[in-house]
Image (tube, rainbow over all chains, first blue to last red; front, side, top):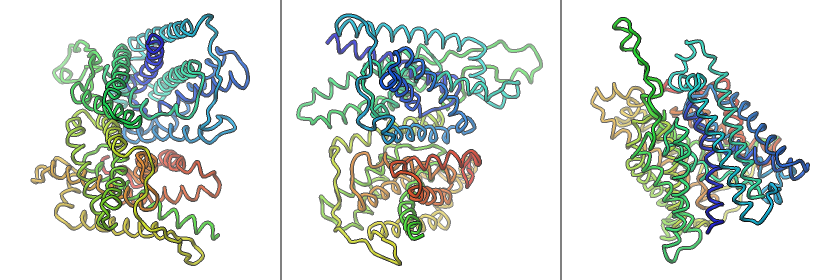
Amino acid sequence: MLSYLLVISTFTAIYALLALGLNLMWGMAGMVNLGILGYYALGGYVSALITVHLGYPIAVGMIAGTLAAAAFGAASCIGIVKLRDDYLAIVTLGFAEIMRVASENEISITNGTDGIGQIPRPAFFGTETVFNISYLGFCILAVVVVLLGMELIRTAPLGRVLRAIREDATVARTAGKDILRFQVLALTLGGGLMGFAGCLYVHYITYLSPEIFQPQLLIYVFFALILGGRGNNWGALVGTVLVMILVEGTRFVAQAVPGLTAVQVGALRALIIGVGLVVVMQWKPQGLFPEKKRSYRQPQSSGEMQSANNVVGESAQPYS
Amino acid sequence: MNQIAQLAANGLMAGALLALSALGFNIIFAVLRISNFSIAAIITVGGYVGFIVNTMLGLPILVSVVVAFLAAGFVGVVSDHIALKPLRRYGPISVAIASLGVNMILENIVRFGFGNDMRSLDVPAQRDWLIAGLRIGPQQFYNFIVATVVMILLFGLLRFTRIGKAMRAVADNPSLADIKGINPTHVAQLAVFLGAGLAGMTGILLSLDTAVDPTMGMRMILSVFAGAVLGGLGSIPGAVAGGLLIGLAEEMSLLFMPVAYRSAIGFLVIVIALLFFPRGIFGDRTS
């Protein structure tokens, strides 16, 4: 039971990094990205290949994996920043699909569906439990550092610009902001963060196959951010914890139903989680901890100015 | 040369099915301005309804196709009404993400009931026809014909009937249509019914040619989206052109790319196309 809890907690920390990365791209900068598993997998693959085939230390692999995913984040802006919401959602979904197909078929690099095994773990001395605790500690440390970094971005002028772009890119551009540069920055940082999460994942479970692109994970991460409150870093963290409790809770619920096959148990779990996502979106469309409205004092001026919308951080259409 | 003609024939036949689903996706988008990703699972539902009606109940194929259309349309309307409609006021991306959840729910209801095994429908195995040096699968050919007929009927419906005109009016300008006394709720329901029904019909036609399994919709859906996006979201003729073009491009890619990358071709095509036409080649009536 202890090791089960440790493993689940570690996964929670890794998924929290994904949710934080998504919060930067979508929550703050307003670019819905359904291709997040592409960055995650790319980071994992790069780190796995560098440590397994080239024999470099894990730290080198993780740095390279993170940088590769960040570079991919920057590159992905070429195809996507000009696209409107629905086009963006579909195209990013396709990005991840192309990467999944590539990971299955570029066997000379990825070893195809057989996957890459024997990925090294960091050497924390001692038993399996000591390793699990140490690794969990490392992941939690990473989450804390990233959370603080994201809070810095959110409160800094950079965060304000990102929100301005999210609310109305034209107005932000009129105010003299180089929209593209900030969008690239959000995709690069977010992509790198997700790649880093992928590195943490592969060096923990020591095996990597195209199954890393499991569609449920995409749903979990969006569910976590929506539940916690889009735009809110703390919300992303709390949302991830709650979603993981739900995901693992369904394991016990589904197993408690007698006479189900393994496939039916899996289907029932996914069904409950899907229902959970829809229920949460209807019940708390802004999440449990909505992004705080940041109101600024009305400028003291003529009546026309009074009607100007000077609330930043609140959207007329949440999640739009 | 013969190989190219063969690939073109295959591409048109596969593209007709993509066009059918892309049309369903775009009808919903045109009227509601939302991307309904649960179309993937609706394709699967259509396939399984076909399996139940045709193989388990032993009814003829034509009956199965009609029942699959109606049942998928019904599932689409019910799931939209319960899960997605209350979210529309929060914006299109909320609905799109919730529809991913609906997709997961529907796919897993099917999986819960039928397991992960592939099942084939009760169709006799037929030898390919050889026409002018081209190998044509009879079932694929029938599917092409059925898809074409259905698309023509749909154009007729939209062009000439009162309800079709109402749908186009709502697609063009919802508030103006409302003023003229068109009930937007009914039109929306009809759009979802038709859209989901077309996806379900795609599912049964596809499974007549191949087999059913719970992920059949997901495997196909990216090409469907590619067709819908290429044609322009919400565009009816665009969906047909986009679906056919993606079908052709996927088959033609076999000339210079390994078969495994066929499903990626759709995306390469739309990423390149969107660089030049950010709203699809047939534009977007919502702009």
